[in-house]
Image (cartoon, rainbow, N blue to C red; front, side, top):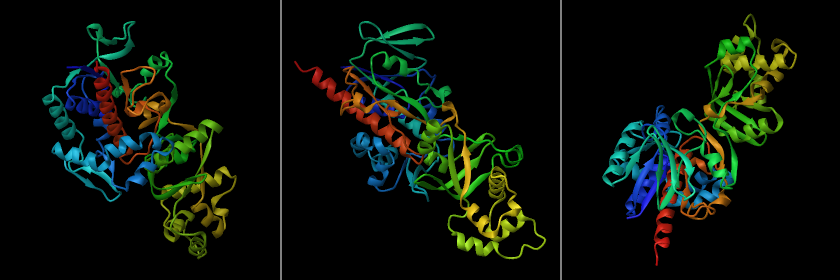
Length: 409
């Protein structure tokens, strides 16, 4: 029986291990952490968003320029297939109001426990606290363990080591230098689905830190997203921000800054807002008038004040038409990207030109790669996990094909 090493015990690695074991391989999963699926469990703390229910063409478009490279893998292990797989593990799923798919338990731990039981029954072995450090001169895998160095011989290897977000959970990007030394082209790892820094005034920061912006529309350039965001002490984050994070990140990294435009009442045009704001204010404060006449939240009014101050004017001096315009066009200057270790995921990774149709590294026959190690990114909403599962399955299938071919006389 052929021996396969899977390095990384996250969703991509575990799925590769399952496919390999089902194909008759003897599989050992190695991970630097003391247990499997640590980032997977963290992802499930707010309700495990496994995948999304939108039509597959729309789903695939979320991967943007990486879509042609991921299409076959995701079509082979589609969102529907992932839901069926979860159900077979006793974890039924449902579609939320946003179209996102969750286990009915809303938790990752029951699914992970059932999965690990299935892998154990299939004969998959685990070696934890094994940090991969590369290969020796004979091509054998090298690991650093609590008991010292370990050398492992494998007929094939699947690398599923993740990106560089949440390093304390195991994804620290330490594999980059190892593969770069083998002349594998790797796009620099960058934060994805991350927050951004903003130089808020002390007054705004102290008053509105932790406050949500609900039902807003966020725009940069030609890209607009509806949703929610959250004011942080150092800037802004949240689902709608994450959906624009690629465009925002590239603007900030390229120019040193980016202007995000926030519409607080995107369902009302300027004419309607101007009419509402043309009434008599009386003795009301401007904040109360904006809140009652245009239903602008206190944090929204705070953002308007920040924009007015930045322009050198007092918000009280704005005409109704100017207030109406500002409500749906608040400029927020982003000054930086949150650190990669605070990001939900990472962009960058192994260039797709480096792998073949079976996810094998062309320069390293018998070595496959899956998950966030590859050069793709996607918004939150189930797309991250879906591609991790799907590429893990594809790498497992690819390893089985390669093993079968390499063993032919």
